[in-house]
Image (cartoon, rainbow, N blue to C red):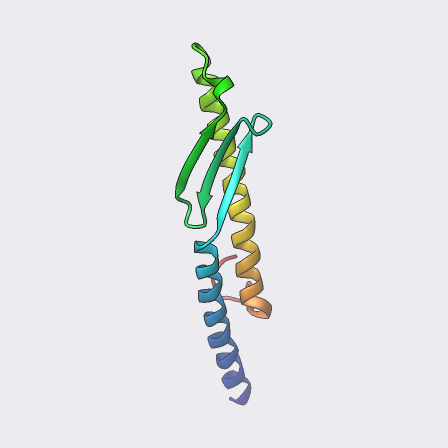
Length: 106
């Protein structure tokens, strides 16, 4: 049972690291871009979209569909960054216990 005790201690340490990684993730701010930076979105680590910046040159009658597509692409860019950073933080926090049965999916 000595090994089980060590495993439990390691699991508790991992839980603390996962909580710390979650807090770090929540404090992240990511910038997604599309159209060579003509559309930018700011996404928080929680997934909340907090800002959309659109270059004035895109504000032309009849271009609404293109602008919408660029906003969607910029958001997807920020979301990919968020997912990658989240995975990296959680993998680092879980350490050798990552992927074990009963552990969070990373």
